[in-house]
Length: 274
Length: 186
Ligand code: SF4
Ligand code: SF4
Ligand code: SF4
Image (cartoon, rainbow over all chains, first blue to last red; front, side, top):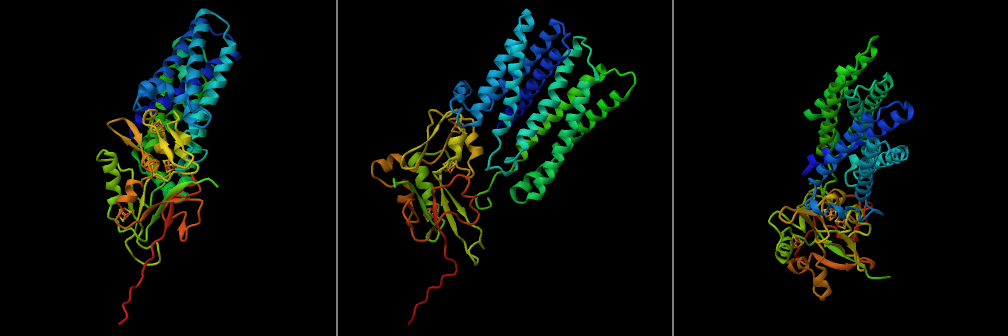
């Protein structure tokens, strides 16, 4: 697909931002001991990731300056809904950041932003649930987009929090390990379903399996971070900070490779076998 | 019932000469890599014997157009008579319709950075003229029909055509007859 780098960057960065926003809001709500400077820094990171994602998405358009019109078909087009929800999420992220920075009341915007984030990510997935592309015409796009948000988002938030010397408990990393494991297992199931389906769906499965990107994604995005996080958490005296950036970088690269594979391997219905 | 127009593609008549494609390209001065109409070779053993057969297809002006649903800027509209129109003015070139159409109809123009497709020569038809492909075909293999009429031999699909249930295309097909023998009795 042409210009897919723009979609790869937009989808991965927006899902990372959504996951990080929810993580920050949950930590703030549950633990409630976060310094304002720390929250400001993390929410700034969310704004940055989402802003970069939106900027990247323009690279996919033939006429980027007219992107503002893309919300027009909200009633029918999942793409319009995606544009509206991520636009709203970006706005709420900026407000959330501002509230952290100025010490204003932030819980209402935190919960609204989290709800919008949790709606925006599956909406993004629905853009690709298309009868014309049988390999996508199922639970896959929505599930994988959500899994990117729940693996990469908390790790991104954790990196930013660690930079600000915020002490994180084990639970966030246990959650990321569980999410990475789910991501790996569900992809294995999805791939076996594709391959057993026949026709262009199986072709998508084989395109995935036989691609070097898939094997890189497997080792970089799943096996290596699972190994690292599992090893660190198993220690009595655990010091996550020195491994944190590595685990985050591996998962980020893995997700970027995985998304490239998602767009690059899909085979659409054919016209008379052509 | 209101008139709903569609293409009737007669593969029994078609000889695969591509004149329809060229008539369309000529009428709208399409870029070299763009073809609103395409002539597809059919699988040789699809009709009970080996034969070279063809189907000439453009936009199917579907009853339930996937392009229209997917487009975020409402660049697609469906006219009363069934023609699915695409507005180049509204299009922002996001290519979402290209992903959604099961028949690979919308094409991206690298010069205008927008998508384009067949509009069934709507302006010509409004003037009472036939579409360029219909006029250009030497075999009279393409006609415009009212899809609500019963047309003898017209079918909704051909082997290898994507599932018509997805968007309910208005194109109808006449299957090729393979192995027809012409005998001249003395
Ligand atoms: S054939 Fe494709 S482009 Fe034409 S109306 Fe149907 S879905 Fe839309
Ligand atoms: S490429 Fe143009 S016509 Fe197609 S979905 Fe995007 S804006 Fe609509
Ligand atoms: S011009 Fe007529 S005969 Fe020639 S390819 Fe087109 S439909 Fe077939």
